[in-house]
Amino acid sequence: MAGPLSNFKILELTTTVSGPMTGMVLSDQGADIIKIEPPLLGDMARYLGSKREGLSAIFAVLNRNKRSIVLDLKEEKDLDIFKKMVREADVLLENYRPGIVKKLGIDYDSLKSINPALIYTSISGYGQDGPYKNRKVYDPLIQATTGVSETQGAAARGEPRNMATIIFDKVTALTTAQAITAALLERASTGKGKYLSISMLDSALYYTWPDIMWSRTLLAEDVEPTPPIEHFFQVYKAKDKFVTAVLQRDEDLEVFCLWLGSELHKDPRFLTFPDRIANSELFKEEIERLIQNIDAEEIATNLDAFNIPVAVVNTRDEVHLDPQVQHNQTLIDTEHPVLGKMRYPKPPVDFGARGPFPIRHAPFLGDHTREILTELKIDEDNIRRLELRDAQDRDAVAAMQAEQQRLLESAD
Image (cartoon, helix red, strand yellow):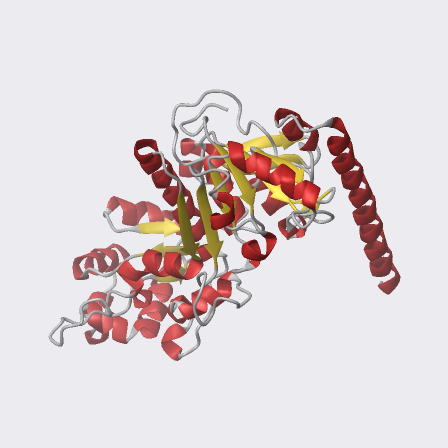
């Protein structure tokens, strides 16, 4: 596959989002990603959310351009195959819970003797050690620990909420992809591999600190106070839809009010930005009263002409119709051979690679077993052994899914 990372091979032993998205970014840039999954079910994200023919939408997006092989790393024969793969790999990416790779005998110290140039990358929730290392981690827990939950929704009234997106899984993925690329660049001059430990906790704080913690960065006693960022932005209901407009500056509010024939900007409760923050709920009510009979697009057109930051709030069903999204050709429509029509964003950076995208659609479990093992010159008996196990696992999963469907239908 064309791309700046087209000469690199990466072994991915990850599940769900943070690891697979790391692999997605690198595969979009040309790396050969071999996704190594455990027998029977593989990556549990295969069954997460909306799906068709046994493959979920989130898995299909995060695992495009990858090849899949099933290995049971607790089995000696499979472990031998894995170690042969390690010899030829540039990067190993894993997101097991801390301590598991040591028990399996595939930790960095065990593998660097096989391949001293290996970039071994471990993703964890809270870190490889410390008081939280054994916690089972999901994105909302990281939001809570890092103070992000406090900033959302009705936080000002003491009602923290989690963001409705698994933001820090994805932030960690972007952090990890960049770290791997930097490590490969360093290896080009040193010839030596490296162990990278990346936690969701550290990635989240690195990402959110500049703005969420701007009142907790300067520690001197005479720092000029500033309201927290969650008080800065409002969403307003117009006649037909919602708009978000930034009315922080006094002069912007004045222009806005003059356009509507209002003197709200002269109201003592809203004269300055601190006043508007102190009376934010009342300010929101007054703005919505002014625009209740105006369409959102008309508001956006006029405020944009006045150089006031504004945007119409798109529903998720409208995003693909947004004029700028269409102009940028941000979203692509493609056809998965089993899932059918799909739509998702193209990579945001164009490195000039040519050809169809994606090169490969997300694989079903073990789709590339024979192809990968043939490249490794694994004997035919071993290949057939793994293919037979894959077939038996597929039958077992199909039977489980049929039983689940039967139980659901009988419950109805």
